[in-house]
Image (tube, rainbow, N blue to C red; front, side, top):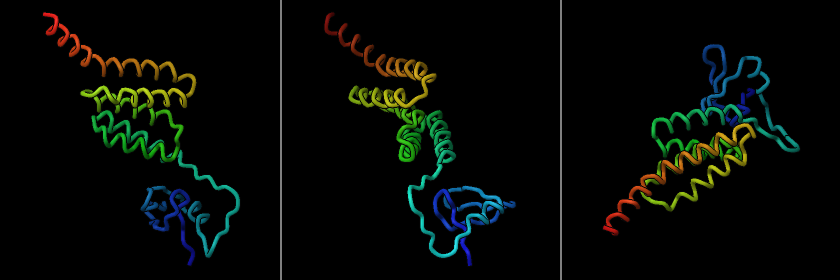
Length: 163
């Protein structure tokens, strides 16, 4: 019997639900016509380079990362960003979110400011030209947000020493 193999993840665990075939591993959906094309029997030899389009998966992870970030779930957002970067190392949105997370995670220690700047820099490097100014503004705003409490603490301590 021929098996249907998901072209996104390679799983054979597909079920028919509401008129479409749904991969139980990655959630990818196929119409009946698409599922027929995915049926394989025996060994299939492939030569050359095969590239799997994971644009939908990346877009889904971006939305999940943004949702987690907006809910202040920094670790969850960071996990999604890492998964995105495993698929696409040049995804500027994932680097941007990681930069914003680094800012929020490190309110107490100044040690991670270099990490934060590195993430924002990668976001600027990979972003489309029309997005770079916006990202630079976010970097400045995030660093200001991060550094302001430290600066206020510094001024407070300085006043205590000089009085």
